[in-house]
Length: 233
Ligand SMILES: C[S@@+](CC[C@H](N)C(=O)[O-])C[C@H]1O[C@@H](n2cnc3c(N)ncnc32)[C@H](O)[C@@H]1O
View 1 (cartoon, helix red, strand yellow):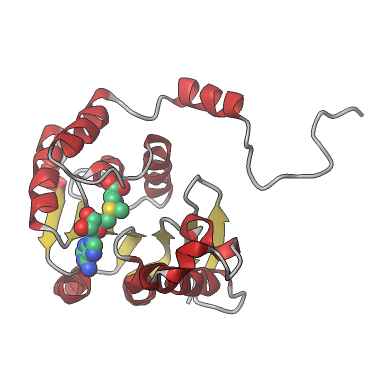
View 2 (cartoon, rainbow, N blue to C red):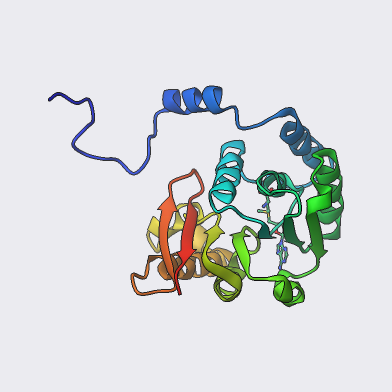
């Protein structure tokens, strides 16, 4: 039997041609999401939303989880929120948490324009303070963590307590911009906030990786690293 598959199985493809093929084939960004990205930039928001393709992965994962109740921590302009809300059936809800009032306002407009505003509740303020306000509506099917990195372990701890068994926890930027594999001499580690982010993300990855831990986890090798865990305890 012949095969073209190499004996060394790489972590992810680094072929730009394959990336082009996938984008052309799956067309992850429709005009609504493109408008959100443009309006967010025009409103002065930083371009730190998920990529179009990562947004599609979020929607597909939420559909696979048959999610009816989703929590998102870190709304920004609503880009990833729209992707998640699109996976919800009628009657489903996305609770999304955002610290900055300006971001929350832009996001509200995004949800209206995407026609998903009736499924979305924006909670403005520090997420760790506001999360207890929805606990009685749990357990939740999916929690997507994409806000201040130092609080990632706290967010994952909350998710573990309030996800249903078999529910999904997802954490974006799980490569910590490459810092996790960088030497201690990396100049970025001179900055306190990068050291804090690296340690916090490392802790989250360790929780997902622990074979006896509360999640069965893996790393999806997106450009930023999307850590995923299925709650099992
Ligand atoms: C990476 S962006 C979120 C991007 C968004 N998930 C997307 O892909 O479209 C992170 C957001 O988290 C917000 N944020 C930072 N600290 C926060 C906190 N303590 N509570 C809630 N939101 C916070 C920031 O203001 C920012 O809008």
